[in-house]
Amino acid sequence: MSKEAKKEKSMILQKEMVSNLFNELANAKESGKKVCYTFIPGNLSELIRTFDMLPVYPEINALQSAMRKKSGAYIKEAEKQAHSEDVCTYVKCDVGMMMNGNIGPTGEKIPEPDILLLSYTGCFTFLKWFETLKRSYPKAEVVLLHTPYQENAEMTPEMTEYMVKQFREVVIPKMEKVTGVKYDEDKLKRHLEYSKEAEDWIVKIFETTKHKPSPIDAYFAGVYYIGPINIGYRGTAKAVEYYKELYSEIQDRIKKGLGPITPEGEMKEEKYRLVVEGPPNWTNFREFWKLFYDMGAVTVASSYTKVGGVYDLGWRHDPERPLEALSEYCMNCYTNLNLPQRIDLLSKYIEDYDADGYMTNSIKSCNSFSAGQLGMMREIEERLEVPVGFIESDLVDPRYFSYSNIKNRLESFFQMLEQRKLIKQEDHTEAV
Ligand code: SF4
Image (cartoon, rainbow, N blue to C red; front, side, top):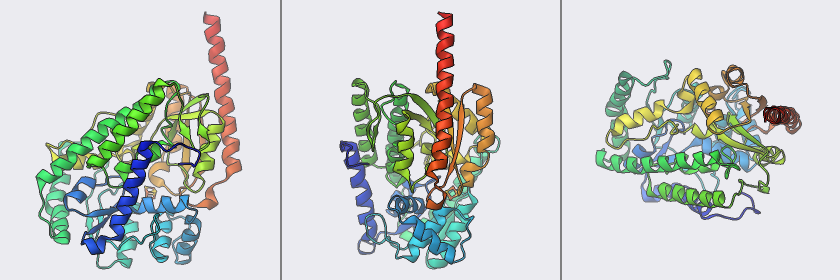
C-alpha cells in the first residue's frame, strides 16, 4: 500500500504471491506450462490448477495499468483502432497493453494464451472481449461455459445439472486437449478443500467490521484482501496461510482498539460507517480513498469484494461435489444475482454492520454493476430510511475521474449523515 504503512506479514505474503505468479508466467514457455486467460467473476481457479495451467486475468492487468498511470495512453491507442468510446475501459486498456508488448505489472511480458476460458457470461462484454483477443491470438482454443442468471433468485438442480454437463462434455475435454493432462477429480477435490478453508477465513475477516471502530476498511483495503483468491490462488495452501495471517493481524488491531490502516496512516476517528456499492476507481485510487479518510468514513461492507464470489450467506466450494460446486460458484457471483437479491444482500449489510449510510459509485464502463443501481439505491433508502449518496467515475479511464465533482457530492452526503446523527442523538436525549 503506501510507504508510510508498516508492512504487515500478510502484505509481504501477498506481494510474494503476485510476484511468483508473474514470474511463472514470464517463464511459461521454458517450464512448458499452458496459459489460460479467464475472468474474475466465475473464475475456475481450482480446475485451472488441476490441469497445471497458469491463469491470466485481463481485468487485473487493466487495473494494475491504471494504478501505474498507464491506462489513459492504452485506452487512447485502442480508440485509435476503432474501439468506441462506449466500450468498457477494461477492454480498451487491455487491448492497448497488448498492442504495447503485453508487459505486466512486474515489467515482464505476459505470455500469449493457449486457451481463452469464458466461464461467466453475465456480462456480454466478456464475450466481445475474448472475440477481440481471439483475433489477436488465432492459435488459442476458446471454451465457453454458459452460466444461467439467477432470474428467479435461486439455483435450481436443473441449472446445476446444465452446467455440470457442460463441464463434462465441453470444458474438461478441451482442457485435456490443450494441456495433454488427464482430468484428475481427486486433485480437484484437494484444491477445493483449500478453497473452502480460505472462504471460511474470508468471511471471518469481513465480519470483523462489526467491531467499533472497525479494524479494516471493507472496500478500499478490501480490494487488496480479495486479491489472492481473485488472481488464481483460490484452492491453494498459500491462500489459506495468507488469510489466517491476515485474520490474526486484524484480531490484534481489535484488541488494541485500532481503526483501519490507510495510505495516509491509521484512521484515528471513525465518524461514519458506510456500505458501498460498485467497483472503485483505479486511476486515482489513493486520492479517492483519501476523500473518505478525510471525512472519517470507513466502509464496513461492500458489494465489489463479492464480485469473485459471495460467501457471507454460507455457500462454500464443497469438495464432495466438485463439479456441482464449481457450477454453483459461477451462478453465485454478485453480478449474477438478480436486483432484488442484491438489494436484500446490501440491506442485510447495512443492518448487520450498523452502517450510517449507503454510497453508490456508478461506473461509466460497467453495465454489470451500473444497471439498476439507482433503483436499488431508492429501494434501500425507502426500506431502511438510511441516508444514501451517489457518485460517478470510471474504472481505468482517467478522463472520467472528476475530483471536484466527487468531493462536492461526498461533502453533501456527509453533511446529511451528520445531521441524521444529530437528530438521532437529540431523540435519544429526549427519550432518556
Ligand atoms: S462491463 Fe463490467 S463486468 Fe463487464 S467486462 Fe467491463 S468491468 Fe467487467
